[in-house]
Length: 153
Image 1 (cartoon, rainbow, N blue to C red):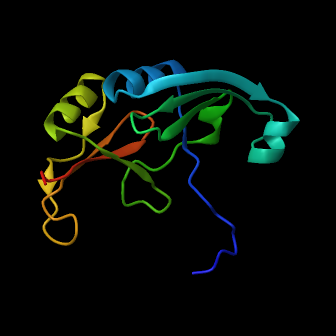
Image 2: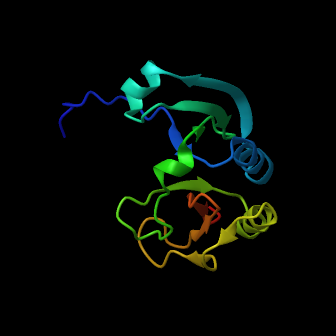
């Protein structure tokens, strides 16, 4: 493998959301992330970086227990920009996988917050993660989260 892109680490994952307040409530309340900070920005800088016309954005940084950072972004003209496909198999669809202690408790909390499981938790049938329970959940902005409960070691 070459280091042509000079990538040294993954810094964070970002999701555009329709309501920053609702997204923060979900990520902190249902998933147990910690709200680190909130801010607003816009103008030419944001246009030059994102390519979005006339943007202003409210952002929140939430952090998982292990330190992984998720950035939530509510663009002022977000609904005009369209939404991502709702299907996990759609080209360009993405998901974030989270390790959980108890997948059934995690699904119950996610569903109590208004998101839905796309199916039932099932064990991975073979390979290095054999036995790990997995399930996809998704919310109103078509953000998909894969919940993973590793086997006891």
